[in-house]
Image (cartoon, rainbow, N blue to C red; front, side, top):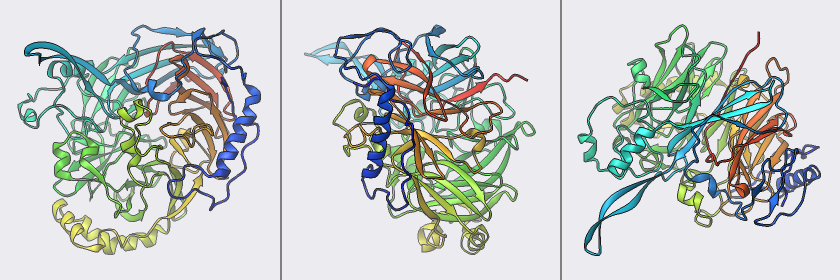
Length: 617
């Protein structure tokens, strides 16, 4: 078994446009061969010693071998990353192997699943007698849990990493034990989990204020909100901001955007807002779900307007919104064809149970002028799911998106399918592509919008939705965004230089499949991959057998000139050792700089981490 494989000494050959896999094909043979060659080259860096179950590996000073002496598990599958977290309440100093960059001093926060199975006791009749039996409330989707927040303190001068963690919704865990489930107060509480409560329980639930640890906010963690600097916030798919003490991670306040400003209406908001570093604004969108459509309200928080201001509103179909795009002059709202039944959404706490993929519908891109504070154009394209970046080029906007054929990936990421090998349906994880959509000739598209779109958008929500259902002009008149594939499939959980967000860029990082796992059924991403979006090539990979990385977070070197001058930080599950470790990679070469074993498993996370460096002036 290989214990470590580093990035290639030479980048794989650039794939020509037109060589992309079609249909359900996961990898083209050219790309698979290229990636395999890259990893075979990396083998020269690794110790290829074979290790049997139950044998010991001694600690060494090399980055690609285990830090502590452990017994290896023959099972190296990913399922260990989808159970309850092992939580240590102490601040622990980790053993660092390697050397941190001399500028990497600060805090790195991560958020993800913590408690996913809650055990409780209930009375049941057994052999005619009433007895106490054990049962479980289970969060059934990767996106559902009682969250775990980790704080890692990097100190380059001492070459140390310390770690502390906390479950941030323990009050909800108590309620689940007491009630054998819990009653959601709002839509979008879960992604795909049964609350085990009746609709009637909503009416019987007291309307008292929710405690800071009474809502699961585990989708995104934020260290920079203009006007609220120095604080730490967690977000969910509902309209909640949970503030944590940035030092000990205790929940100290829970509020909604609507409580910050009543104009920010709606029980749902995008979990991942955008920060414009030039204007000093935090921008997000809330959703006020109507009978047939939804009012989307884009809002801004800043030092100048700490109570916020409304940028623009629009009425559009009720869709699953997990992202939007921001450029200096525009906000682009992509509405994917994962459409909700509005009345069902208002009464159902589960997002997937309220939404359905509609293959007859396109993705709609609503282009909002930040200066004019209104929709100025709309476009259509095939189904997408998440955005990488967006930037303006003349009278056009380029959107780099993660593209799937449908919503299969969302329905594959249920915890039962991720825990039990051989149960995933379809058998192979859905393949994605990174595609660039060009919203061309905004001036002409704006003229079309004035003719076809503006009259409908200006009507009331209900009348607008009725017109959308009764006429073909609801989207067929929209210009089609030009599409081209940019990098080989299949990549997910993208990360870029934060200061390149909204502007042209070259490098994207994400998780993907190694050549060893790409064609296997039931596997998940096991590699970190660096791509060049301009040359459309893979320029580096990190892979270690039996290891599964979380989203790599790019942290730029202060005052760096090169776009990729920085590090990637990822929390990696080492399945053979039943432990996780902190991995710090050189973002240029993807060679390991340092790693630190945690001595416990941190469940695999889909949430992006956040880093706050100590600045020296």
